[in-house]
Figure 1 (tube, one colour):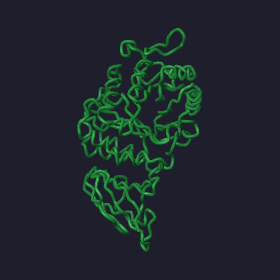
Figure 2 (cartoon, rainbow, N blue to C red; figure 1 turned 135 degrees about the horizontal axis):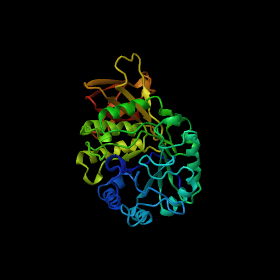
Figure 3 (tube, rainbow, N blue to C red; figure 1 turned 30 degrees about the vertical axis):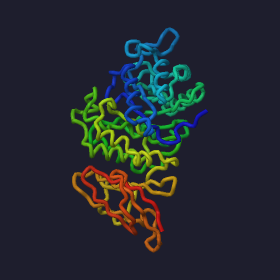
Figure 4 (cartoon, one colour; figure 1 turned 180 degrees about the horizontal axis):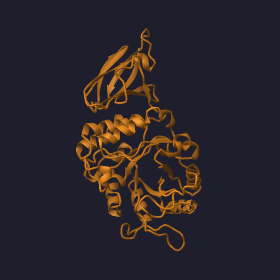
Length: 385
């Protein structure tokens, strides 16, 4: 048995860009790009097929059937192809009677479906929350599928997707989930990024190894490109600076990093963001600790749109994020006292800028980051005497 979910899962999901328009060749092409463009080397490993992969009805034996037009070779052959690339296949189902797009859900078929996924070679299950019978307890339905997956004969990572309902952060870990959605669906616009990030401030203690707080999939590099007008909202997406801040927030806050853009045609700037090894290293730190919000006094320069986050790393370093979600440039001062360093001590901090990828020098007592509108600064701080 493998250990699953030690650090936040990394991969790609079909929904944000392609929604219902998925097929076998697309999934194979994405897997190929993961290898040739460096995503696999950077740590991304799951290729996840979202909703709309099956026929509308189960077969005469009660089994779900992959759409033979979209997936003519079948799911087992597709899984074999993904595995041949050193990657893992993810699939989608729902705790309700039907999926969000109206395909068969796994309600009361949990153990049968888990067995079928295992036989196909599936490595990851995204489990949605549409069409749940109103009298059924959602928490129990996720516990049921967790039990089914743990006894299906294959190691399958369990991604619970109930949109933050039912105070999921209080019971997700004990239910056996490896990651759980704490937010409603993301949209490819700046307001959505800000809203989701701010909604999770104060919930940092509920994420950690083996059960990660999932703030939804990444929109980096989408630029408004989606089959679904609600996801893109005809906005043209975000700027590269906003995508950079989005990726930084998800990384330091410990969210799984599931790419949502069309990686076959990703811009170089999007690749530079998604493949930044220093930011990924913060997200993938082995202890998977949540970031805490630095709340200095007086608090006149802080608010919902301007804040700092600090994450304690395994080797004793501290990752510090300076986030300016406002529309004006801001100077954000970090007093080292607020991360545990007394001014009277002989301890200083050596600071490394993870986006500029350069050493900034050694500082004592304080550091002031000048942060442009919608931008961020991510530092890795090492203690020196």
